Each structure stands twice: as C-alpha cells, then as structure tokens.
Image 1 (cartoon, chains in turn orange, yellow):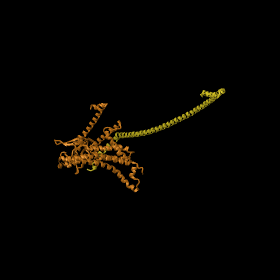
Image 2 (spheres, each protein chain N blue to C red; image 1 turned 45 degrees about the vertical axis):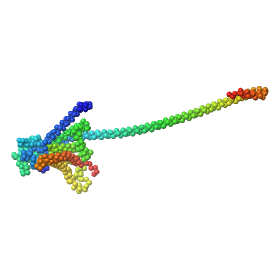
Image 3 (cartoon, rainbow over the protein chains, first blue to last red; image 1 turned 90 degrees about the horizontal axis):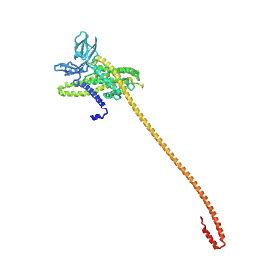
Image 4 (tube, each protein chain N blue to C red; image 1 turned 90 degrees about the vertical axis):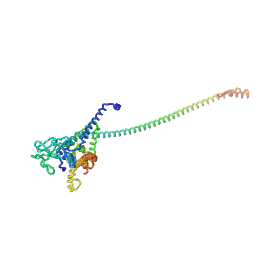
Length: 391
Length: 165
C-alpha cells in the first residue's frame, strides 16, 4: 500500500480524493438507511376501522386497508402496531391541516385527530367543528355536535371543506420537487467545472439527453422544441420520481391521485392550446382539403378529440398507478389470505415472490408511464406547432 | 367510491401551485443551465470535429502540394541534367573538332615544311651533285691524258671518295 501510494507524486490529492469518495459513500449509505429502515413496515395509512384492535387480517379489513392507502392521508404514517398492553401505536409524523372553512382559514396539526378517520373525533376550531371521515375533512353544520351517517356511511349533517392541507401527497410532491431541484441543480453547477459531468450527474445527464433527444426533438421538431423543454423535463422527472417514491415503503400514492393527474393533463392541454398555430386551429374548426359538408361534420369531432387527449392522459396515468398499487398490495395480502391453505411459510413464500415480480414490473411501469405522459404531451405539442407548408 | 368522489379540489389546487412553481424554478435554475451547457458542449464537439476534418483536408492539400512540388523539382532537375549533358557533349564535340582542325593545320604545316625542306635538300643535293660532277669532270679531264686505265682508276677512285652524304 505504501509503495503504491508512493508512486503518486502528490499524496495529498490522493487523500482528499479518498475523503471525497468516503463522504459520498457515507451520504449514500445514510440515504439507503433512511429508505430501508422503514422496510420492516409495509406502506400504509394509519388506523383502520377493523374490530381486531387495528390488525389487518381479514378480507374486508385488507380491502379497507388498500382503499385507505390509495386515498390521500393527512398524516405521514409509516406503520402501526399493537403493543403488549393492547395499545395501538402509530409510527410516523403528523402533517399540517390547512382548511378553508365557512368561517375562514384554519390551520392545525393532523395529530389532533388522533388517527381517527371515521368522524368520531370532532375538533372545535374558533367556532367551526371539524372532523375527518375517510381522509376528508368535513365541517359540521351549525349547531351539530356529532356526525350523523346515512346507510351508505355518508355524513348527512356535515359539508366538505376546501382542504389545502399539506397531505401526504402534497408532502410527496414537495419531496420530489426538492429531490429534483437538488439533483439537477448539482448537475447544472457541475457544468461550470467542466463539460463532462462527474459522480451522480453522470446518471442524470443521459436522462435529460433522453428526454431531449428521444421525446422532445422527434415529436416537436428541431425548430420549436427548446421552448417546451422546461415543461417536458419537469413533468417527466416529476412523474417518474413520484412513481418511484410510490414503490418505496414510504407509501406515497401521488400519481394515483386523480386530482394530481388531472392537473398534469391540464397543463399539457393549456400548453397545447396556447402554442397552437393558425394551422392547428384551422384543422380543428375548418379542416382544409375536404368538402364543406365534411368540414361541418369534422369540426365537432376535432373539438372532441382536442378534449379527449388530456382526458386519456390523466386517466392512463391515474389508472396505471392505482392498479399497480392495488395489485401489489393485494398480492402482498395473499400472505394472510393463503395462510390457512399453505401454512405461514408457504403463503409468505408465494406472496413474496409474486410481490417481488410485480414490483419489478411496477418499476418498469413507473418509467413507462412517465415516458408515455411526456411523449404524448410532446406529440400533442408537436401537432399544435407543426407547420403545414403542403396546403 | 367513484373516481370523482375521490377528486380533491384542495389537492388539485396545491398540485397546480406546486407544479407551476416547480416548472418555473426548474426551468430557471436547472433546465436552462443544463441544456445550455449540453448545447455548448455539443457545439464544442462539433466544432472540434469540424476543425479536425479541416485540418485533415489541409494536411491532404499540403501533401498534394508537396508531391506536386517534388514532382516539379524532379522534372526541373531532369531538365537541368539533360541540358548539362547536352552542353557537355557539345563542348566535347567542339573541342574535338577544334583539335582536329588544329592537328590538320599542324600536319599541313609540317607537310609543307617537310616538302620545303625536301625541295631545299633536293636542290642542295642537285647543287652538290652538279658541283661533284663538275669536280669529277675536272679531275677526269685533267688525268685523261695518262691512260685509259688510269682514267678508269681515277673515276673509280673518285667515285669511292664521293660519299653521298
């Protein structure tokens, strides 16, 4: 080792390089530990309404659990368990609830609901009574003290409020945003040192190049693509990072929230409409090259097509991610459901390998959906900015 | 639970704000510098490739030039050598001719001289022979009176004396 080090003229630089590598390794290991320390717990929400002291071990409670996970939640729960004293313990942290009620803005921490999700806990907040039912915040009508339900378990004397809380999904989006910001900021600042990226930037750069050269350029065209790169790159990495976060035991299901995918699709929709040139609108309302009668028939169809494009975008992303999460959780639940038939070890083995297999597929789907969303967005943008010089 | 029951307006609004901000921030602080750097690098690479190609072409041109020059030089050298050889031949020929002419003149001169000398010698000889004949004739005439035999002896003696030198 000494002779090896002696060969180099500057042992100081070797040392600092070694330190850099060590630093990086430590950072990476910290991150890994953060991610995997929660592996012991399967992703999921807080309390379930099952009778068996919060245990999820029947078909109904599993269904409820999956549904609960797919929905957004107001606190960040990693896992929960029942201790020896029979108390339900929740591991996680509360998130702020921000609601716009009939009396104005109310802000408090979600821990005040004590993990209750069926309207049993009613909070008094400066003249408004708030409760949480199935991850939604309700405001009780004036004068009411407790929530009344109809046969379908819908609250009859409470109204939903505008909920601007930092929910788990919002938290996830902020987290993804921060990851993206710091990751690509480091890539961007890396170029100041030299044109060849080093370290983690070597992984990020080909991804950026991929979006630019395989998605934006061929679909939008060399002339216009640069304008839309900001949107396309952001959306691509945003969806991808969130899809991947959804596969970690942190249990995010952001891209499986319909509100999120609708918002993403609306961005595409408006960008397409605002960047559409004269030809684009002409092709929608007054199709060139066909008889007048056909023009009249085609116009409503084209308008419909204009609207179905973003619709397909948000439904595809939402459905794929929701389905993926449902199936992975369902298969994981086989561990419990097949216990009677195959024994604990057999059921766990079957469930483990199927879940592993599906998770690998989901890993692919996570990328694929980000790719498809970005690709179709750029395709629609490309159609809007295309110049038809043959007419 | 229907899809639209799940739609949370609050989440939608939060997402709207977050996504808009994220696009703005990322475009300004990440994508723009990254894409600019990538473009710059690609242009740099393209430039370097073009320069290399140009250099190669120039090199080729230079080589062609060199070859042309070399060929020209060789041709010139050949021409010069040929000329030199011609000049040499001419000089030799001229020299030969001159020498020949000179020799001829010398030989002619020599011949003329020899002839002159010869004639002079012949004239001298004639003169000497004449003188001798006269002398002999004088002596013969002087001794004629003695006898025939004496006369003959005399002539013989005289003839012996006469050496044609």
